[in-house]
Image (tube, rainbow, N blue to C red):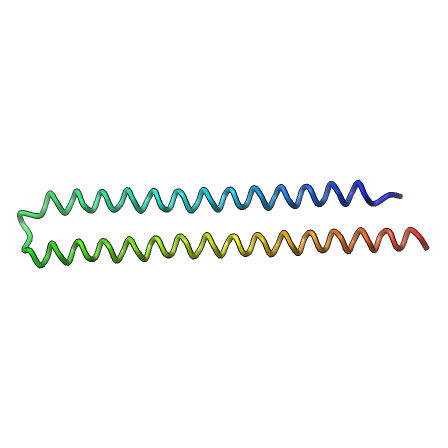
Amino acid sequence: MNTTPFSKTATGVIATAGSTAHKLIDAYRTGGERLNDAMTQRWAKALKQTAPKLTPETRKNAANAQKVFSGYYAKGIALTADGAAVVVDTLVGAALATTEKATAFAAANLRK
C-alpha cells in the first residue's frame, strides 16, 4: 500500500481548511471595523442633533466617551482576530505534523 496519495490529500485538505479559516477571520475583522465606523458615525449624528440641548462639558465628555468606546472595540476586534489566527496556525501545524508522522509510521510498518 502506498501512503503518498493519502498524505497529499490530507495535507491539501488541512491547508484548504486553514486558508478558509483565515479568510473567515479576515471577514470578521473587516466586519468589526465597518461596524465600528458605522457606530462612530451614528454617535456623531446623534451628538450633533442633541448638541444644542447639552452643555459644552457634556458634549466634550460624550465625544471623548465615544472615542474611548470605539478604541476599546477596535482593540477587542484586533485582539480576537489575531488570537484566532494564532489558533488556526497552531492547529494547522499540528494537523500537518500529525499527518506526516502517521504517514511515516504507516510507511515504516509496511516495510516490515
